[in-house]
Structure formats: C-alpha cells, structure tokens
Length: 167
Image 1 (cartoon, rainbow, N blue to C red):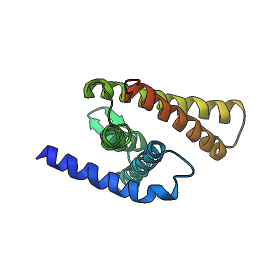
Image 2 (image 1 turned 60 degrees about the horizontal axis):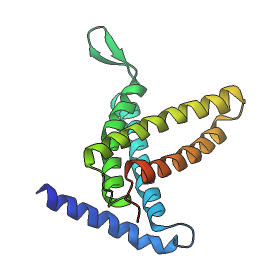
Image 3 (image 1 turned 45 degrees about the vertical axis):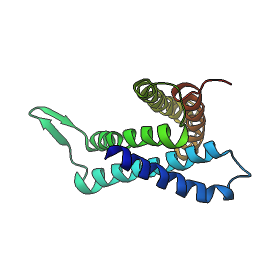
Image 4 (image 1 turned 30 degrees about the vertical axis):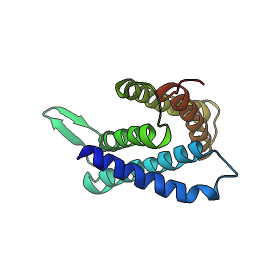
C-alpha cells in the first residue's frame, strides 16, 4: 500500500512541476526548478502551520509540557511545523528533486538533517551579523540571508546529501 501511494504522490508532484517548467526553462535547469518549487512549497506549508499553531491553536499562550516545565508558544509552534515539514522536505528532495543517489536512505536522512541544522544556524548567524553588527534593516537582511542560505542548501543537498556517482 505504501509503495503504491508513494508512486501516485511522486507521479502527481512531478506531473505538476513538469507542466510549469517550460515557463522557466530559459532561466534554470529542471533540477533547480524542482528544488525551488518543492522547497518553496514546503516553506509555505511551514509558515502556515507555524502561524495557525501560534495564533489560532495556542493563541500565543505558553505551553505547559509537564508540571514546572513550560515552552513559549512560538518555540512550540516552530517545533510542530518542523516536525511536519522536515519529513515532507526529505521525501520531496529524495524522490522528486534529487532522485538517483547511490547513498542509502538512512545516510541521506542523517545528511539532510545535518544540512537543515547548518542552514538554521546560518540563518541565525547571518541575521545577527547583518542586523546586530552591521545595523542593516531586518527585512532586507532576511531576504539576503534567505538567498545565501538557499544557495548553500541547494548545493549541499545536491553534492553531499543526495550525491550521485560521477560518470
């Protein structure tokens, strides 16, 4: 049952992406387009889950995990969104964007998680550098950070997490 569902999902996602790729063929290779669509879609899903959890479900209230242990609503919302979009991102990168890697899935998963954590840290460090150290405005700093980290992520995932044998 899982194998059949996997094939249906993969075929559907690739079909949709392939339908729109001709509009972007002049600007980027197919793999880069697939990465942009899958990553962008997963990012939108992440922001949506975060926002709904933070603002509607939790109403910005502290979450009490166990007696005397609490977590802020925004951190809890981040963890909820991450726990949903991390496996979706891994699935899309594994089967839609970077299919054909010779590495075992468990190695890909570990490497994918490692790159995600590095990207998270890079986001934090660049924002601290640009806003706190250089005194830049937060929004342009975030846009620049987003593009730099996205480029790093794409090349890291392509050449490290989901690499293919040469030749």
